[in-house]
Image 1: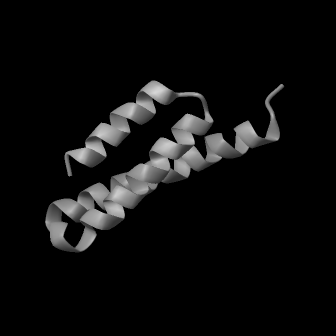
Image 2: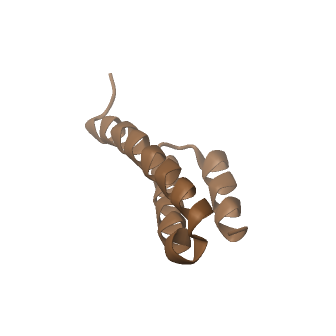
Image 3: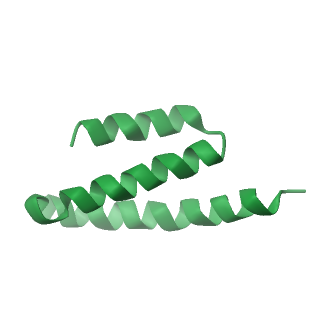
Length: 68
C-alpha cells in the first residue's frame, strides 16, 4: 500500500517531466527568454525526485541545471 504523499509525488513527477520537456523545447528556440523557466522546472523535478527517495537521479538533474 502506498502512502498518499507518495502517490501525489508520483503524479507530480509526471507533470514536472512534461513541464521540463516543454521548457527544453522552448529554450532551444529562445534561450534568453526561457532558460530561467527551464531551470525552475528542473529544480522542481529534482525536489520531487528527492521526495521519492531517488537522490541519485536528483543529483543528475542538479548537474544538468549547473550546465545551463
